Length: 382
Image 1 (spheres, helix red, strand yellow):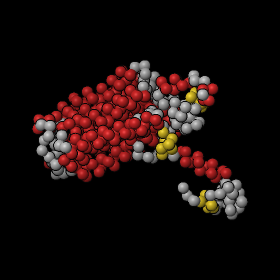
Image 2: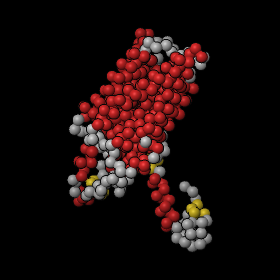
Image 3: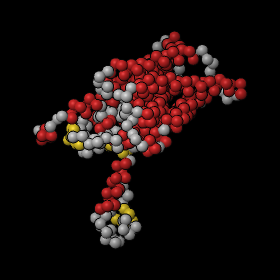
Image 4: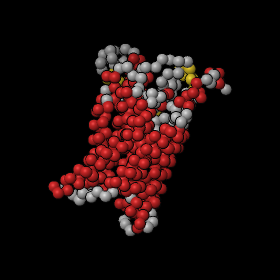
């Protein structure tokens, strides 16, 4: 924190004390404004994190209570370690399958753990993740016969455009097609609904596509020849970077669509560029094409570095879309009694954010909100 603070009365930067040492004006308002600015930089779904933080778990799984986020982070780290260990030992096919299922498996556990759609979990998960997996399997099988580009020459331009541009765009269209079916249901009208559907479909598509495209590797046995280090880098790219890019791009686009057409927001102009589907579509297409061209034209290490940058951009974009949606939706809700916050356990007015810990109550599954809504306040002293 800056050791100085600007006094509103005299305009000078002074020591952070109770009163301005230059004009004697109390610095209470200055401290208050500083705290407000700091809070606005906090992520609505996880107020202990900054909005612009590169945080995979709280961004892809925004409805996880804080107590569960540590478990998911440990599970993700353990999965990455297993994938890398298998690759170092030379079990490349097994490492590849492990990389392909890492993020989709965490997504399934997330949907099951938080019980987001307790009334019909099979239907919801099926409409998103099952669609993504089946569409990816069919797509990968059809695309397996296409030639791969071998360079930047003019003779390979058409192959490069197909592999690096048109096929990735088709993949993106298939990823979002399943979730858009749910747009017709007015029951799913929160920005978190759209983002969850989009991200779930994207990660399952990414994992299934990787497995189908890599089936020829299994013909070489469980331990095919090859230098382990490049395989480790590729496995991490397959298991982390590529599904994160897909989830960020498709999840952010779906969030913009839900904000525009389903969220209970009266002032659509307040959404800004992040909440405009046309701009979100262009952004998602740009990320997907950039990723496709990197995989098509670059060697392993440069490719991985470029994909890492794209993944960071995708995560930050999705995070900002979620944050914006939660803030804008909160303006349309009236205060309705009290609720015990499922995150911190204290009583708070039933609106959008907990008055005690600051978490967005709309980022908490409805089943947990309803389970705590009728808990009497006297339980606080028990």
